Image (tube, rainbow, N blue to C red; front, side):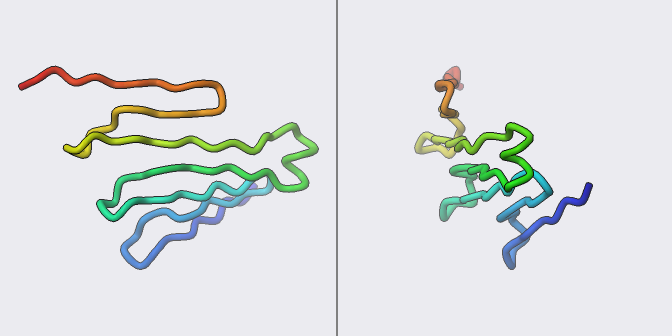
Length: 81
């Protein structure tokens, strides 16, 4: 099994490709990961790999506050300092 990685000029992961799927990574201007979208290949479709998107939400301080998937959302709360 082979895995290929695509990176942008500053080294951020843009895509990961293997036999069963391609995952695309999207970032905001602050280099925070906004989403990972998986798209199955023909082989992946035959193996039951599904397409899905994972999204990330951040607060004004840049802290992760929410992860959203097709199955639901996970939220994070932070204690004040």
